[in-house]
Image (tube, rainbow, N blue to C red; front, top):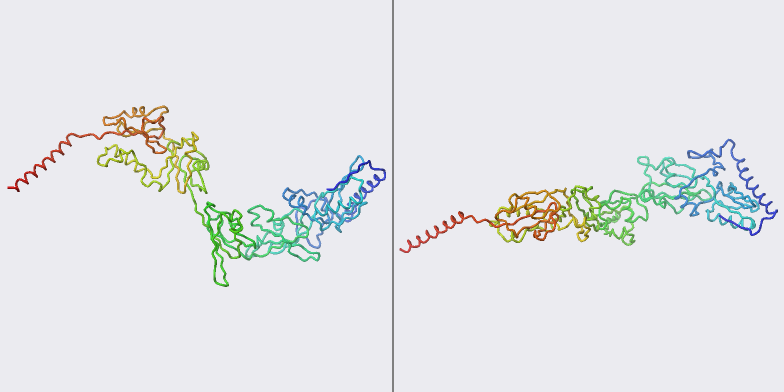
Length: 559
């Protein structure tokens, strides 16, 4: 847009010039329209774009049809000033003359000139929008210094683009200035597929037609495979007047296997790197931090091959040294160590989760949707297999006593402890998730199992009590209350050896130090081994009899 301002009120002569200028701007599009083919309705939009030939000519006024464009097309074509101006484009000229400003459209004529009265014909065809604006500005500033004239591109014209090569219907198709390569290929019926052909999806060339009509390499291309993955318009550019789309046949390929979402063969494009092939294959399947790859490159003429170790973490981070360029026929194998954990029980989404480079217990519960209303945090556990091969040990009193000397209650409890899964970590879920104690938020490792059981509102009372078993949980009850509800202590109970075993960690704590009993906890009462008098008398008598027999035998031998 250009504008020029006057510091004084226009004189009568300048007003007459402005009137003549307006008359000239009105007369030009009228004359152009009069030269158009009779019977043609300039207001009717073309609903279908069929291939055009010698008998199907473009209407000079077709450029006047309003064409709304989106932001992507605007940024890529208009704002960037890459749009190529040509016959049929419409510019808007705004003139400030007196009290009533005038805005009129001006067409670029068939010779590619924009004719402005009292300014002259300005040659614009073939120039981009930025160059055209500058040329108009220079011409107007030299001839209409005393008028405020503003000029802008109002409407885009239609222009033909050839689509040739491996498409269903090669031919010429009309473009309204904001079409991309994929749209023209779609109008041409799409790319050829076997058995009719094997069209390239990634090596599509955008050629430029010379003055003689010969195609030359325009330095641009389209990669529809990468465009569908990334949406980057650099892989599916907008077309300009003078472009021609050439779709070659599919030739070279590269192959990828291993830990990617879509292993297989992919079309090769010169300049492809390892990261491009992984993107085409849908990305890594698993922990990218542990990924590694090997590139196999064969030299068939020499009968040899090369193997290259690829540091994928660096390659995917954009390191050019690690992101090796590919060659046609290369094969890439990707290996990923899948570090995963399992969460079971009362979470909204139980199952297996990849832990990546680092994941905490709180992170995992968040990914699993959180706890359900029936979850028992007090009984929840984390199991790390192979971490503690001997399992959780009981009190030293039970460890130091041989199995023959244990009472029935002690022997039962030790058997119960041996049945527990080894590797149980001392994590307090209640402290972590209710009291917000982040010291309990451990880092998870590969193979960890997190178990969230359903709430069991009871406390187990075992050992030397009258009626061992599960006692219904009630908030506020202490150790003595639960023992009382289990019938109380029996005769062999050791009052100083009562323990509370925490349900979430398995830790043993003296009852005298426990301030709160939670659902899932176990109260265990130690006891003395009972002395049976008759069995002691019988064993003593047997020993004395054996001693007496031995004495008699010795005396007999001495005689």
